[in-house]
Length: 485
Ligand code: ADP
Ligand code: MG
Image (cartoon, rainbow, N blue to C red; front, side, top):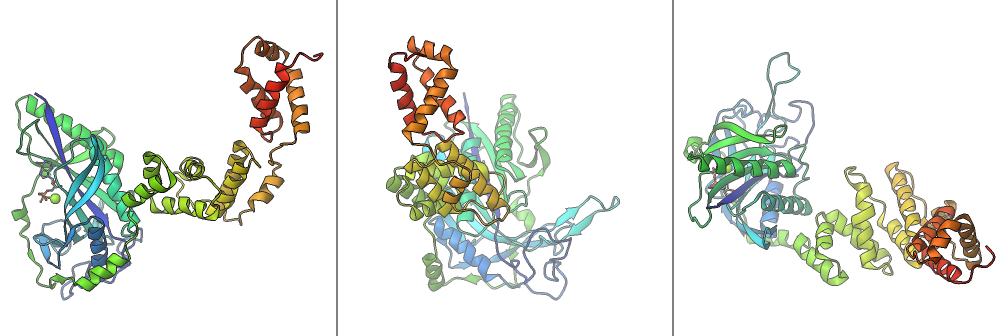
């Protein structure tokens, strides 16, 4: 009998507010230890929390994007546990009444597109961090992160493979950045995931006992940790053992998960409504005001790119994996409506992304790319030349230099395509003279050598020959009787 894996994800999304969830201290990353921790964040006596309106607005924005229920009244609760980085002895979170419930995120499942339930999304404050390095054997506590606003997004136990979990996470990651509520920086912990994994016999209706893998901060780690955990649990069950409900950690170096602690039950946290905070009451007018500022969402935009430009689905999905990228693509078309959308899409998802990838650097201005592609389309430059020019423009962009005008650049680099037949004829003759062996073989029927001749001519002309015209000229010239060569 075979096994079915069941996966539910809890994602902590750090909201991109200027200040913290309950204090006015800056909610930024990377300041010297405790530089952005105020009396509220430190849990000093005599202070009171004040909710951050912007964080609540971001939660509403998220809920609207998922078609979720926005609860008109939600409650902040105290969740108690003891840890050195939690000075109050409790974390302010939401428990019985979260702000967002019952939303849906569409994922590319193992068997096609499929809705995954977002059971709830609630607001909570982050804890601080313990520091164990560079303190001469002592430990320190940095409370900069304490009180930064998190939206904890909880899925239903509805995914069935590491790949499906990966899709869900990527979609969620795209969405929160798209909405402008999170910077999505996984290295800095702005988007971290706990994965709950269990297995059961195929056909069983009851869920198996789960383990929870904590604090995964890369897509790859999530997928590896889940795949490992599924195999581990199956092995435990097949050898007659029982899976324990526990919290585990993923060790990226070994590609394994290992036990951290037994899992707490909700009652261990002694939740109760925080008496220092009133219930959050949201009125219709506020929700409507936020609804009016909602952008076209990634799925809708992908569908539109497919329908209005005839792009393949995978390419439209790639373009809409990031709002800036989708905007960029459409900006290129807006500048030069004569550029075929397929050409622009190929260049944006190909050359432009390849240059940009990993650098996080600004893209070449859309107007420049648009002109470049227009010249390519008009046959003024070759594909090779266009690549070269794009690289120059990109370098200028990285160095913060004013980018050169595309046409000026074409002439400065001498890349204007040669389409003067007289010049091309000379080129053809030169290549034929230099390659008697290949010419003989071509004439004996080795047709594919035509590409070789064109390649040689392109090389000799430093990429400036028009390859299409060169092909025609070679074919005509070599079909003719050998003229005294
Ligand atoms: P907790 O209060 O311990 O965080 P929840 O009931 O809120 O537990 O569930 C947390 C996450 O675990 C959710 O994403 C849920 O889908 C998932 N989950 C719950 N039970 C299972 C299970 N048996 N197998 C896999 N995932 C599960
Ligand atoms: Mg949990």
